[in-house]
Length: 359
Ligand code: PEP
Ligand code: MN
Image (spheres, rainbow, N blue to C red):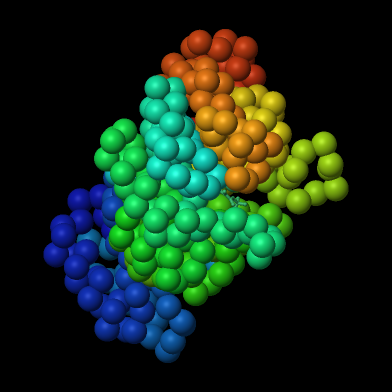
């Protein structure tokens, strides 16, 4: 259920609706938009009928939302969300480049990579202190020591930090040290972790599970938002298919599909998405072409010595070529790449994404 307020609704009118929703035993989520505020109602359906709210002053309409996802949808918020990560905007018209090593290995390693990222025009630093590994014998990350290293890197290079939380314990620490909490592909449907991330203070980067549908990804984002954290960034990182020329199949078509139905920003991770260093730059360009809000790239100054997955890794030099192309606004990127501009139809750019119609 969604309550759409009139464009000129006063704060006390919004507050009165929120109080009524809460008295009925539901949770109210005021979502301010460019033109009007909507109030999402979540919670188990009870005897109370929120449609009585139609008579409240300042209420334009009460909409019964037919999908399971509500707060993530453009019905709740027609305009694109812009999520602030330590002072860097993700979403809207800009394009962000997030770079860093798969795993934080040492202060020296992290500093060397951060320098490459900063010089290459990257805006966010991402490195794993907690690594979800297929084998229990693989390097599991430095834990809190890794978070301390990330905090030093942020200080020295003025790069806000994104890092993964793998369980409740690491989530509490990541929330404390980092600017953005990554929930990885393997945890996309760890519902208790998603709810805890929804109670965290920092923005959440939610990666698509390797066999998750679009609806499952959006419902996982809904879990986070339904707990009150509206700062969610989605990330396409490839899905498992029969194709074996790449590690995963980067599903770029999910980007315009999500843009049509959700206001949340979406990044693309071509490093995990292809698992091939030589595919990172072309798939990054393609990601921006289909409307992604940025890319997430694994970078290592000495890929051959990286403790993990060096196949996916781009050297900082190669990244700087890409970042200087993408570091600016989408329009600037397109101006410099007339062929890319020609390949893009208006239908797929985020600014033209049509709000979804109610059935
Ligand atoms: C990672 O980001 O290093 C990672 C493990 O990614 P994913 O969860 O997408 O596999
Ligand atoms: Mn990785």
